[in-house]
Length: 126
Length: 92
Image (cartoon, rainbow over the protein chains, first blue to last red):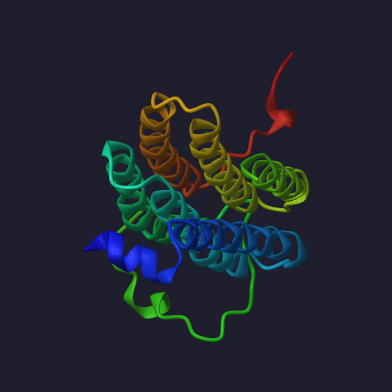
């Protein structure tokens, strides 16, 4: 059944092309991450870029390699890396934002925040 | 093809190193180091496909766990106040 579908759309080469397209899309996201990290001066914007663009580029590149490889145990380990990247990258971003907000020493970040939800709550202690 | 992609990602990783040197506060440096580490993790995955060895994927899995714990520990340490050491009150 799968072979008839593959012979209809032109063989295995279409799937390899889709895989390489995902890999190129992943590196494109990495280039955008680097441009954003160099150009911006504020800290919270850099946090935003590192959290969104980096995770998206990593997921896209890993999905591309999964499509190129096929269904083996190798793809299962790559899927595990994808799941781990999705779960832990936002948690690290959140912890770093809290640490930068509560820090009072010499490296205090004074950026003009338009909306500041943590000013009256002060939930917990770091 | 894979070799070209690896070289492009390595160049972007080395360009992010500029923010590690320049960044005015310490938190900028932590963010830039985290970005470089994720990029090199993906270079490790691509190397595993280039050399046709399956052992590098296990190293990448462990390295991603270590990366996450490192950023958490650094953020918890650097959130406390700096202790200024006063050089004038020493008597030697």
